Image (tube, rainbow, N blue to C red):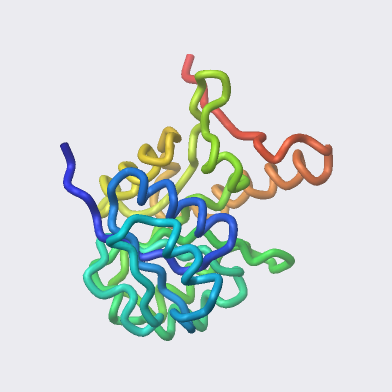
Length: 206
């Protein structure tokens, strides 16, 4: 049995809170990183998790973490990357953000500039959070598309499987724009065509 991981979750919206709950249920130890760790909504989330969960200021929330999930609005990523910077050296970063309305949905350039030692992955940004809360589709698990470096891949795929999804790596970080095309497709299907927010993808090999 794999040992529990120390995970930091930054962002207490639907994606961050849902993944924190799912990972805590798998036995992982969760730290919520927040500008104000004492804020009511932060404390409420911590109280929903196991007894080992805690909240810490952003400046030191990533210390000792095996992986850091970033589930904030996309536009704050450059500021966040600059604030965390060297604290992320050697740490897996799961960037689940989408900068809606921008030319690109991701800010991998900001991560590279401010946290060059981090192992940054684009993951959990292509589907609605409902698929993380209830991943089972009549016995079928959706694929979770992601991209990022080879180092840290084992941690990322374990966390994807712990949510109940199948990891599907598109390649290195240079595939981020391709990956984000799946995000735009999901938005087109759900908001453009009125499909369910539990719409998901499954790759079939012939």
